[in-house]
View 1 (cartoon, rainbow, N blue to C red):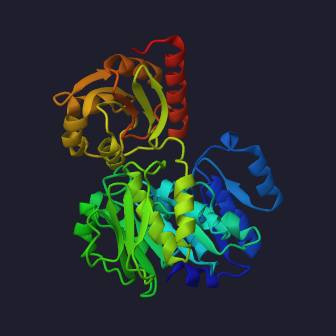
View 2 (view 1 turned 135 degrees about the vertical axis):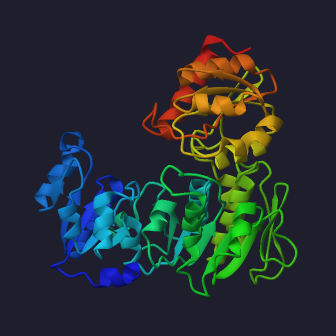
View 3 (view 1 turned 90 degrees about the vertical axis):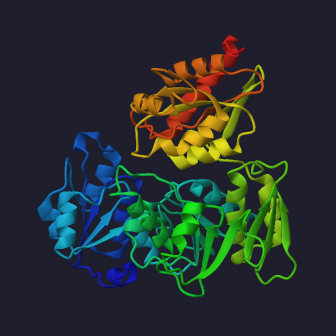
Length: 468
């Protein structure tokens, strides 16, 4: 049964349990209360560590909350379980409930099952947030009302709690969300790339790749599927996954008879959209004029054009777009050395993409909490681009063992120390790149805090005159 069928079967007597009380969980609770069903919450965090205001709201609205774990009895007695993206699906009580026939949906699937507005869904190992925000910026430039959210930060359920007056919903979609979205059928689905990630949560790489490709599973022949023709993993696997939607490709290899967006340097040429002559877009002099953002822009252009955004407006939005924080952002240039914050690069593929786009010799700052990826996949590009490496966090010894024969490696106990060591390795004309290839939770609250600490350390370096 897909999400719409499951939701259609709910009534005022239906018992729904929301697992996880983060922002998406709270949004799901509010939406379910609006739908008029019986709602309760199961949260692993102890009650004393939860937000008191949220708990007070839940109590006022008659929502019972179990804290400090998930009871088998509560979940097994539900008619529907709604999970937040961060909740592992292999939790024993959750698996037992699913085995007993209880339907399990994610918060995004719950909301998507209630909307008729066209959805643009963007997934991939890397670049999702940039493309999602860029598509949203193009729609806004075209004076179209849009919701931009999903995994990016604002749950779709929050849109359904408002006026619901948008012409399109632009969603960043994670593999975790796709795993709990049966029948998900976006009007436009974008798969940017696939490389090993989240192998601490998936059985293997094949399971992760299958999750990513499921973004196309519910589409119709009239829908659009946008794929990266330059990604060998994606193209190799494409034949094994049925994609019934119209296919459009982007990349340097997307020319010829293939409809889509062909990349030539910093220029993108779009053809095959039924609009007559090829459309040309130049990224020279914009924030998007360096890889991997040229590929990201190509995907966004296709998504926006397929839903009717005019060519002139697309060009205007590309020129004015500014990159998101912590995504290959230039922080400063000190003594001829450029410092880049790419804290969002929490997996191997993201680091490879960042290094491929660098035009200077690189001193790389990496490390953090290991996610189960194979660092050997970075050996070739590290050998070619990285003159030195400073490693931090839980994974630093493992990473050092992998890279020590390829480049100079030093270890640091803090990010501030790593910036100082990197500055001493670098010379004028080099770049210091924070691109960790790891999660941040061993030392920071998230990649955002890690990026802010990096920026503070770079600012302190400039102020103290430590860089050569």
